[in-house]
Length: 93
Image 1 (cartoon, rainbow, N blue to C red):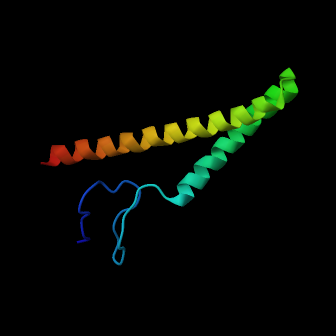
Image 2: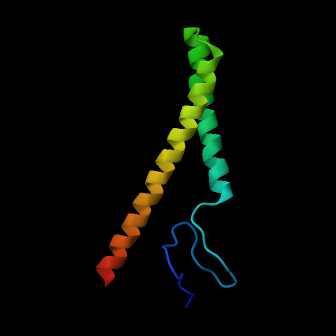
Image 3: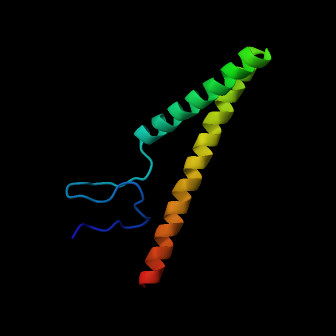
């Protein structure tokens, strides 16, 4: 049997032998989400600048807002999975 965490719920990584710490958000996930936000923001920004003839600041603003919205969506998904795990744990008690 693997050791249980002292506090909190392990959502992204589970314990394996030899692990000394647990975490739910890794640097790799943050970089991945930033990349998704940059791609979506670039698509929206290019279409607004080239298609509608808007200023270049709209490009930067669309990238910033899309990165923030991707982060907010990921945080909501993490909280949903944590709530789901807590509900499953409470049913087993």
